[in-house]
Image (cartoon, rainbow, N blue to C red):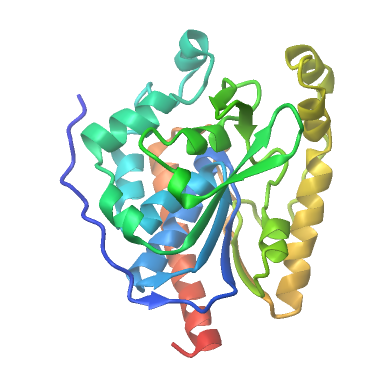
Length: 299
């Protein structure tokens, strides 16, 4: 039986980093709880970024960070990720989506671990959520004010091809933003940011391999050839964007935060203890990054 948890009231941040500083968040399904741990450390320090950009789980986890709700994501791992309504094959059979987005984005924030909408709306920053337009194969970016009740744009950004349904929004057919912009560093640079804090969910040395079984994508999404093309090229985009991140780090224009221990979960894992450990690793490593930010900005 599930029980509503005490309301986690959002806290106000105390340190807004300078304009031109961006927080860039990779996705990764439930591997993204590593990023949630990193963001917990930023909340502990009262640090907020003037620009945040994320796709998929990165965009979803940023919501609790912007609302200032400490421990909210950890509470969700502890009490709700193991629920069949969160992620299960049953969901895929019943609703054509492995993740239960109604449960994640409506039931949980409205009944169990409440979302502080008022605090989220009050934070004056730029927050971009990316999803792929299935028709054009290009990323569509949604601003913070489009993250409304029901979290439709967030759902779209998290909807992985084949294991989630296409999301309809404003006349667009949308899926996982991680297909076209898996690490949205290029968009951040194009928007004029000059220093980037990049949170990845893969270990150092990882490179994405080419898509296997691309024929299945062509069959399943025969009406969306540009989406299929983007899926086939996804590994090229990922590796190019990762190389840019590492180049910026070498040039002292970025800090990369990524799991230091081997990641022991895949993107659909519901193993509570492993996910909690991953979150807590992120919290520890995020605190180390906070010290680097304090030294860099003199705060």
